[in-house]
Image (spheres, rainbow, N blue to C red):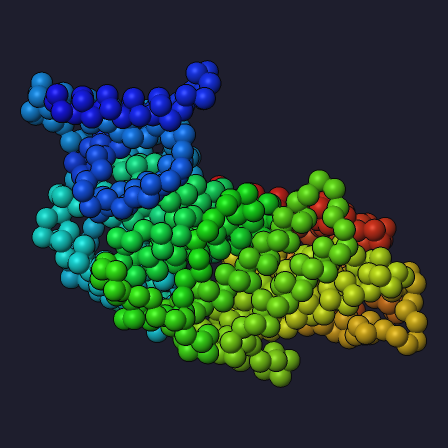
Length: 635
């Protein structure tokens, strides 16, 4: 006790000497709370002899139990010693510690408690009771790590041999397992059950995979709450990131919830020092350093993607990070040796597929796409030169893909997506085209008459056609994802707007680089057919189908007939699977039900927008977001 008090006294004196110029009015708010479990009794642990630190204005403490970043004005060390002092004093007063006490104060304000729909933390025994038997978990874990057959793309941030060591330790002594590691385990089980639910259930999980996914998702949240993500325990970021992977792959995904959740992950990673390159820490092995780089890359890529999908600014643009891009290496090339002789092999060519190839290549595209969100989020429009610069960045990122990640022409194929790699590559192509549309769409109308914006007009139309080519090989089940619907409708709206502009002022006979109006109409009619074939996927698909049919009826350039409102179509309708063209629309108002009529009135607003030509894309984006508020969860 006396030694610890003396240590505290010395620390305070040194800090006072270092900060003599700091105003005494500066205050740090520190909320202390009790410990939720036996492996994390202290939020701010003592630095053991093996801890890796750097003597500089800012540093990250990394040891076997924590990874904590603090800057030059951080009184972390003092608070750490005070905490340990209290703990030691309490232990001397009462040797009987209660390991089940949970910090109630932090749970009322912790961001994750809000994101997890106010999930209440539970006792360890209840959390452990949610685990299946070891043989069942063994099978699920084996499937999760089978990258050749597992249908969901999972970021390569978990070293399997290290994980399996902790996994075996858990079964040997479950009561001593780190609560955050349990959250990681449940997040893995949740992703696996989601894969079963979406891509086919084995006999032992038939009819149960969806409910088990929600159970494991809840258990993940409870573990993260009990462990407290602010305590910087090992695997905190991995558990959060895997949980985000599950949320991203849910059919009823929420872009806003995902964006907010990403903010928690980014801040947690910064709190643990992942934004600082691990190469500065000599006592970290090559393996540990490379995995920290991978984790940070998945975090900022998630920030790029969530912001791009929603159209909100990124956190990344406000963060100074010197963490290097991970190398394109196989896991077996990474040494776990912490001696000075251990070196990192040179990165392999992207033509050679490793565990990180897809992650690195995708992150470069997402980084460029994230710039679109930043640009469009500015209160005042930026210069057109910036648009062209971002366009080059997006184009360079995509065309820099290795050949095995590039997609051949989709015009001559109607084969459905079969493999995970095919879908992953097609998703990147679709994201590329969506980015180009989002960047250039505001200049679509101006490009009709102003040569300065002609490039944007051509790029926008070309990418809209590329997205609708993608629609031809998308399975109906993918229409359940709101992001799929948003992207396809965006492409259709761009073509409708182009057709409407041409109706008001026919294009010149020559000089046009874009397809003629007849071609655009044919593409839109084919898109309507595909929406009709997918109308049973979810309620929103038939709403979109009705909307597109009504739009087609109003852009019939030949004015061959007068169209009435579309109606009589819905899930289970006899017309499902066949296209309703403008020539077929003779449905009367009496055939419409009240719900369909309501949606028709909402969508007709945008027909009026098109007639005004100067289309308000901000209003359109807001409307598209609102169409999902009634069905998508906040998280």
